[in-house]
Length: 123
Length: 109
Image 1: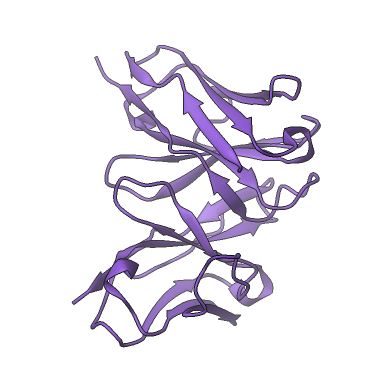
Image 2: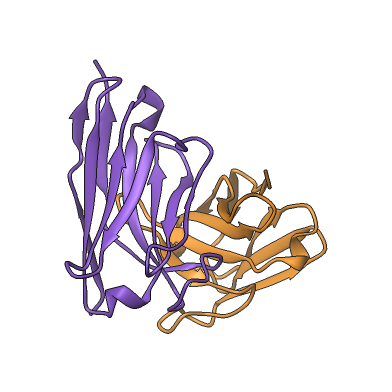
């Protein structure tokens, strides 16, 4: 069974940093591109970042470019999101999501999602 | 950047057909995916590549895509279908960004 479990969320002050993790199991993690998607309270879904299976290709939404860094450790079956210079508008539930097709397409849909971790940016 | 436009809400009586639209410039040339999200839960893929269904999704869920509008159709709507629905595409013109529509709240009367 595919499982994605996020962790690392919490309360942080504006300008602060936080590192999110996503632990994957039940599939060959190293074969799939992975993503972060966020959802502000009461708002819609917003794609944040994608990383290819071998980390060769990385993309970011304009809203986080230069502040967030996505990475992965295939040996540990884990995905990460380093978030720096956090702003109030970064407050959201952050989901880890798997690209549906193995390989480095980075253009399709997401077939499995974690339950999310809440990040609150407030003084 | 590419914009996807969804109606904020759609209401339908049980047993009727719900149609949720997703508008975008020449969206018919893109592959459109749809997600269902119930309160407090993670999104669930219900239709991908315009009209394909993942295993486990009822045949009542179907999709189409042409011109400037993609449509998610839910036939014989049930109370359990009440949820937010989001369309999503890949925007090839903006650095491999995935784009979501604003979401549509489906209310079953």
